[in-house]
Image (cartoon, rainbow, N blue to C red; front, top):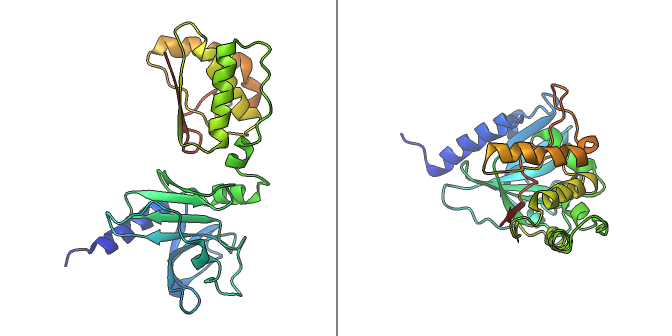
Length: 261
């Protein structure tokens, strides 16, 4: 008998959670000591609130949930936090109420809402974060979006007017949590120097971990790496091999900023 769309979605979600380091368990066979991150299927909530398709535990305390949807039925809107606030059993250990990390997934596409953001909203992610990542976010006094709203005033001493204006406008875009931004600058106006200063501010003041720096030609990438390494080497954690890498292949959460001529 072929799988139903719901069954296929659950199977795919199980695989995605497992790939991200979660141990997937049935609600009748819960063992919260089996690992750091546990995803419990079909967790029963209070009367009248139904079930959580997956309840996420880290260090034996709940901190998130996944709503499973059949293919083509994702809404892409914020999951209803009331279900995971009033609906949680009173004796359930939780890092925070309502649960801060909510997901909606059909196994192919996953949306994520961080309830700790200043203005929580749903955004698409490539996969579920690892348990240790959610634990780290849970322990931070401010989330990335909050830190981006509090970037210090730009020091314009060594910047041209066009560069300073571009960075100030991008700071404003970050503060509004825009999902993407475009900076258009003329040839010779210092796009690389502008990008390096943006990266420096994100690493030092926003405490960003990964920034994707794309160029259209390899030799341009080599030239760009020189000012990057002059500006930000002390802020970049060493790679496992012990070599500092100025940029890696993962963008700053879901924000995309483009600089072009």
